[in-house]
Image (cartoon, rainbow, N blue to C red):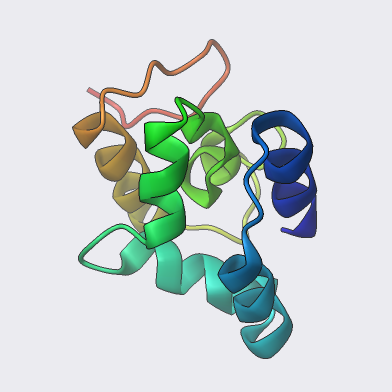
Length: 101
């Protein structure tokens, strides 16, 4: 999770301070669950959308090749992340998890 913060700062110039606080306060898994299951996207998600970098969101992380087959996330979690990204017209790269049709 902290690698997302580092990448956002390095690649997009976005200092996700609240995100780091969440991870330190709640732990990475609980912070991810809150972010992907909240009814509204976080301010960080919105900022990354405006920067054209949804690939740096938790939602994209858990659907990416490194995590898409991990048992730590359920298909329910993945669907929540997928639906949020789809609402914002994210272009899913090859290898990203997508729900079965």
